[in-house]
Length: 317
Ligand SMILES: NC(=O)c1ccc[n+]([C@@H]2O[C@H](COP(=O)([O-])OP(=O)(O)OC[C@H]3O[C@@H](n4cnc5c(N)ncnc54)[C@H](O)[C@@H]3O)[C@@H](O)[C@H]2O)c1
Image (cartoon, rainbow, N blue to C red; front, side, top):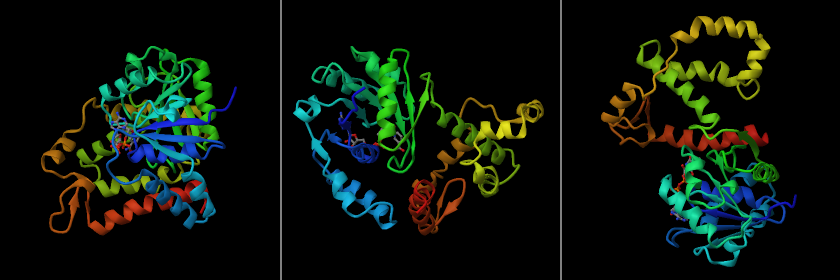
């Protein structure tokens, strides 16, 4: 199977710029970011900033920045040659079903019959996004995680129509870009990882709601126990390690006591109504409030610290 090298990323926002950077790391790659407007700063500056942080940490040589950025081109029109000749498209446009559907259907009219279309939607159905396309067998999900240039996982989502050949090419291409693609065999809400993540959030919120522990205690209980070993000991190896009998015994006793609400918790609604919007809240008396209270400095530190932590985890630097 010939390796893909001609890519188009549709949308140059937060995810699009980082995904363009990831694809540009493939040998011989030519990446075009297809934008809807030429307003705003040059997206390549964002890529430079991402890479500079990795250079500062000693992950890459300084020359790597120009090497990657020179492979990224910007286009504004789907009729430009670099768009029409592309082999793989990944859309990172706003989370609006019609925008995504129309984008793919419109591109299909001008690009090669063999081109692959991937959607980076967080929650929408790739099957529904493909519904206006003629060649639904060439459409799949490719759910990157933010920050996409640092988080290795990409969930490749197969729709009932996606061909096995397309899945193989996508998995191979993402691996060549240094990612860890995993196959989600069914197009289900939340794919794989968000289903697990939000099952945990639901329980965490329920513990607070029931007055079992306060928010900080809940986070500490996660951070200083299973959270610490999770990358080494994920849930199913952990179950095997303790043995299937123990998993059975624990689940027989405890599952009936765990949260199983199918709607958001009432305390999240109360927080919304009280404008306790977390990091996005208005600052009142020096604090922004969500489940907990934060100063501006704490928020800046948490945001900056995330990339530092991920670079340490992923690159060991
Ligand atoms: N932000 C995240 O953490 C995250 C994580 C995973 C997936 N996603 C998904 O990725 C997608 C993009 O998210 P984002 O955070 O980068 O959004 P964003 O708002 O930062 O960027 C979207 C960009 O798309 C552009 N755009 C709009 N219509 C367009 C069109 N027709 N053609 C080309 N460009 C167009 C906008 O001008 C904007 O620059 C969404 O579907 C989102 O759900 C986001």
